[in-house]
Image (spheres, rainbow, N blue to C red):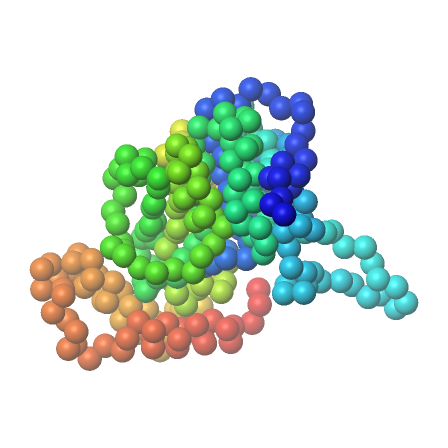
Length: 301
C-alpha cells in the first residue's frame, strides 16, 4: 500500500501568507563535517523569533534500533527524555521577513513519501526557493578561507560559485533526493556544502557554519546578521591556533598543508603548482591524521 504523503505530517492552520518565502532545511544523520549545518540551525533558532507550523510523524520515519536515542536511568527509574522531532519552524529574520526552517533527524524510511510530503507543503505555502546546507570534509588547512560547493536545480540559481567537482558518486541522502524531486516538479532548489578541514570533520567548526550563513544571506537576501556567529568562530579559531602554536611539530604540519593548498589553488606558484607531486611533502591524509591525533589529545576546555 502506498502511503498518502498528507498522512505523514500535521500542519498548523494559522500560517500567514508565505508566497515566495525561502525554505531552509538540514537533516541530522548524513554527512555534516564540523557540525556546520547543525550549528547554523542552532544559531537560527536561538537568535530569531520562531514557532512550529508543521510536525512530521517521526514514528513512521525513524529506525530506532539503528540509532537508539539516549535514555537516563536514575537509581530506580528512567527519566523522561525529549523524543526526536522533525519540524518545520516559521522564523522571522532581523527585518521581520518570514522564512521556513525544516530540521531534525534524516528519515530512515519512506524517502519518496517524505519528499512528496515536503513538496505538498512547498505548494501549500507557495515557497519560492528551497535551500539545504551541511558541511563536507576537504583537504585544506584551517588557516585558509573556507569554500562552498553549490548545486541547484537550475545553474542560474548558483551563478558565481566555482565548481570543485566534475562528476563524483556520493552516498544517497534525503536532502539530495528532495532537491531532485523539487526540480522535477518545477521548483527552485539549492544546496550548499561548506568545506571543512578534514582533520576537524569530527569537531565543531563554527567558521564553516558562518560560511553557510553568509552564503545563504547573499543568495536569499534574508536579514541574518552574522556578528554573533562570527564572534563564536573567532574564539574557536583562536583556541585552535593556540593549540597549534604550542607544538612545533603540529605547526610544521599546518605549514605543509598550507603549501599543498597554495600549490593546488595556484596562489603561491602559479601555473607550476600542478607539477609539485614529486616534492617530498607528506600527503594531506597523513598530515591530517597526525594533526587530528594531536587535537584529540588536548584536554577539554
